[in-house]
Image 1 (cartoon, helix red, strand yellow):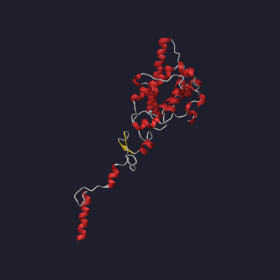
Image 2: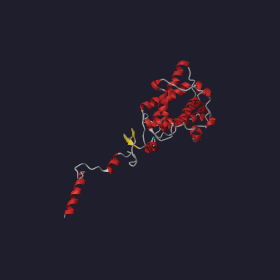
Image 3: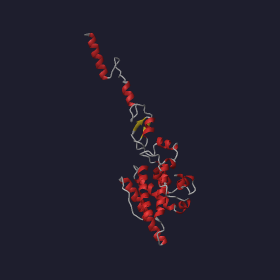
Image 4: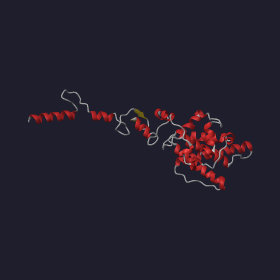
Length: 256
């Protein structure tokens, strides 16, 4: 009877969280759970993740960054990772994604810099108004427009690729609005429209190649979008010149 009574009292103390000395008992299992990663629940958390609004382990941060996590651009760990990422090499990408038959001369970049910068500025403004936009959606929209203009230049036929999402439709609409305004300005000041469809195709392909190089390639990457946004900080363009090595590599077809 005495043993049963002791066991009963012990169970009551454990249930209440108090030991024989009256102090609260500490449960190691609960402590480990409280300190574990908010994603895997196994490893110890070591950094705050603004994407999950909780603390996670470095391994989950590295593995899930821009893959399952919508990392904000001001995340210090995302910024640190980008500092160690090299631009992707075009020769490592599928050539059909880069429109290898479109040759972009350095002269074109000099003569049509306003058009190229107009595309970049439009993307930057669109990104500022929709921060959930991703590089993948921008690349899809640029490729869609490039295919349409390639068909138009080659055969004269107006062909619109099927759009997979509303985000890409919004980007294409913004770029087409820019082109319409661009031609209106030419008509007003020159009395004619000098911008050719072939020029638009080259500007689209150039921007598309740059996007492929600047993005990380991960599903939720915004590395390219953050790049163009920085170029127009306070709406003041700080673009590299046409002889910049990166721009030259983008313009030469033999690099594809």
